Length: 285
Image 1 (cartoon, rainbow, N blue to C red):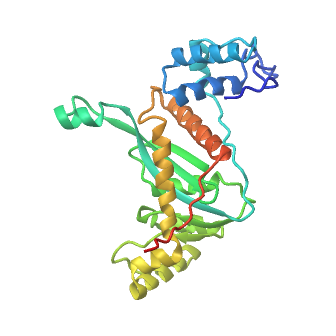
Image 2: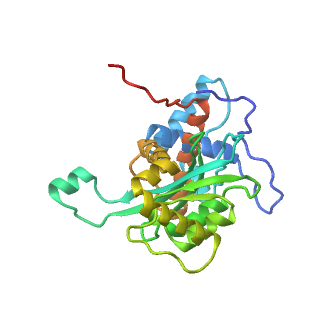
Image 3: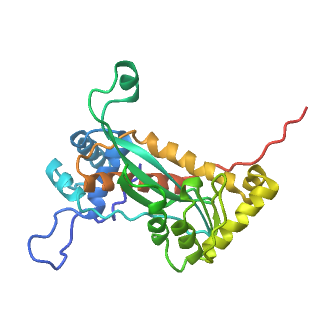
């Protein structure tokens, strides 16, 4: 772990009325990153931060528990990523993160004693760099297809998108039209017994071609030919996301969103340090 002595740890005047913040956003994000990385409560995580600053021989003050908890509600997390030279190949999926209820083992063994609730995390990752480029956090009552236009809106408008790959839950008119507006190819398998859309639009035309290809060649061949199986990379990223914790510890929705954004920033940093190179291996008899 490296600490940059040139990091702006203390806050600067923001030109607004009232007292300026004592600590910068980077300092608050660093404390929350230590909390998420080691899976510790916030008070213990601040003790780790104090020890790290002492080991680095930095005389920076450490924010207290109340300051970090209050600033977490309005903290803006910027997702760093390495821009790729080729057009973006976006993989989209969602998963659930529990924030209320017992664990799965206790529920299966003794039954659920009270209600359980999840936060649904919608992610869009780059298939080439494996970095998370877009994230949305909603309740478990929000469907997957409703958030695809929101994920695409987080990608800069001047960045070209080659394809958007998602499962059959995103086979809706709004999703396909949103992908077509970005001039990207939709790699979404049509639902079984899907019928052609009569309304003429860029999204419906591409879907009708996929239906004809599936009926003529078969769904398995279409998935292999179109490269749909690359979507397994986003499933792997979901597993890495949950390795940082099966549940969120914050109690309010705004703080839960910031906590999940901090996890994404950590995962992107790990991907920038190094990523695996997967190659096919042919067995020799």
